[in-house]
Structure formats: structure tokens, C-alpha cells
Image 1: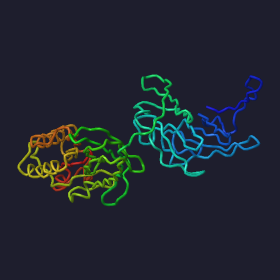
Image 2: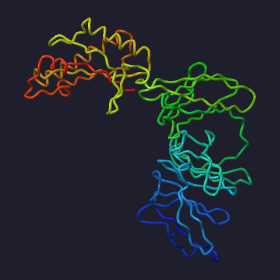
Image 3: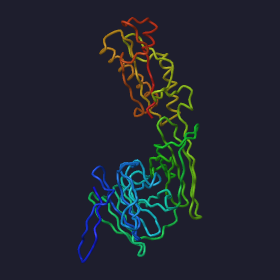
Length: 387
């Protein structure tokens, strides 16, 4: 996709030329020329792009040539799509993005211009404009407080018009999600907003800046919970007042399972294991013995302590007997351990079981000549945390 320039002379469009920063190697699209004619904004996936499409700007010089394209930077552009720029006379930038915190797919955002090279953090225009589908190509007539945008919220791309009104008072709750021990931001965490009856009102996925924002209503009670795989969910309760705009800064610090519990460890490959005593089975058997019950009761207590934890039970055999026999035996033993947990009050949906047979021995013996102790080491159950 390329951008072209044409001149309107004597009722006709003439002198149609391609702008020099167009190319066969990348796309340039969605041009917006400022009212003074000095800057041209556009979207492109040219070299220097942060995401799949970024917003760029060039200066239109007095002789009709152009400066080199400048990326608007990481405040505006993300690793996803930013397109359809529109700039008001005071420099406020409106654009579409599916990379900033939004309602779904492309949403329309605005960002105040702080200086010639800096923009404020983009603000989502909210559900009065944005839907769960693509919303884009925002155009504003500031003098008359009206405008237009496009959306496929009904299945097809259609044009919509709106009238701009003063915002009602908003009750905002904002915060960050951080690791309790390291205090590092945790992008990719999920934050959920609940009302005082426990109903889920909104759910967002935290971006790279680790923060979240919710709109709330006055004089109501809410609960916020932060979730991330391998972490204990954090929660906070708050209520809004009737005194106008409310700002609540909630630092959601979540603790990893392996920081909270000595028996949980993170391996070099990233897997998180619950390290318990080995579970032993009689030869060719898969029933749970009293010794195994004691070990599994520790696991029951841990799973009841952390009701959002999900685990995989893995069973391994030694190498005596055929591969197929060992695979079937290990599946039965893993399933037997799972059933014990279910019988002791752990919801089945939090558990999975898998038999590995003899495929993942801890000790590999030459010519399969293991000692009894080595065979016993290879016969084991593992408990891996999935989330």
C-alpha cells in the first residue's frame, strides 16, 4: 500500500505522484495532513517499526520535500497494530490500536501532545465509542463537537457519527501488578473487577507497563483480584465515595508459589514442581497404599490452601517390562493418584494426569543394567504446577 499526492487545478486532480517514503518493500497508509500543511502522519510497517504497524510522522518542507519518517515511539506504538492517525489543531492525537488496554480488537485512543517529540499515555475513549470488535478511523470536527468513525461491530464495516459531550464524573481505580519479592512489574497478569456480590464486572490483561485501570461507580463496594500463572492470586477491596472524582492507587503485589512454599521449586527449564516424598506402588499394582496416602494428603492440604492452583500428576516406571506395558501401568498409577485427590475434595477440573512409562528416567543405566536402588529412583510420581 502506498500514499500518493495530487493537486486540484481547474476542477481536476493532476500531478499525481507517489510520496518518496512509499516502497514496494513495506506499506504506508492512512495519511493525515495537519491543517497548516506542515506535518503528515501515517501508519506503516517500514524498518524501525516496533509492532506489526506503527504511526509515523514526516515534516512537509517549504520546497515540497519531506523529512525522514519518525516513529512516534513506544508511548504510542506497541508490538501490535497502531493505525488511522488523526490530529487536532492543538496536537491531540487520535488513533486505533489493538495493543493498548482496550475493549477488544482495534479500539480508538487519544493522547495529548506534551512536546514536539513526546505524547502522554494513551487514553481509551471508552465503551460509548469502542466495542468488542474493530473501531477505527476516528475523525473529529472540534468546532461543532461532532465526528465520525468506522466499526465492524455488527459484522460489516460501517460508518458512525457521534456528538461530543462533557464527560460525566468518573470514578477510577488504577494500579500496578508486581512480584512481591522482586517488585518487578508483571505484564501478562490478569486483573478482574468484582462487585460486592462477587459478580465479575470486567477483566483485563495487563500490558508491558504492568498497570491497569477500571471505571467504577460512586458509593459502591468492589473487589479486585490479580492472577498470574505460578503466583498466588492477590486481592483488594475498596469502596468509592460520593465526593467527585476518585483515584485509588492499588499496588497489587502477588507472591509466587515457589517463594511462598519450601516444597515448591522452579526448575531451570521453567517448570514449577511440588517436591514431595516418592509414592511407591506394589509390583504391577496401581492402588494407593497407606504410605502414598500420607504423601498425597500433604498435596491435598496444599491444593486446598491455594484454590486456584492447577497441577499435573505424572507417573514414571523403571525399564523392566515392555514400553507399552510400562506406559499403561504409569497411566493407571497417575489416574489413581488423581482419583484420590478428587475423593478428598479437590475439584477434578484442577487436575490432570499423565503416564510417561519409562520414557523419562532419572538414571540411565548402560545396557539397562540398573541396580534395585536405581530402578526405585526411576519409579516415581511428579507433581507439576500448571497455573
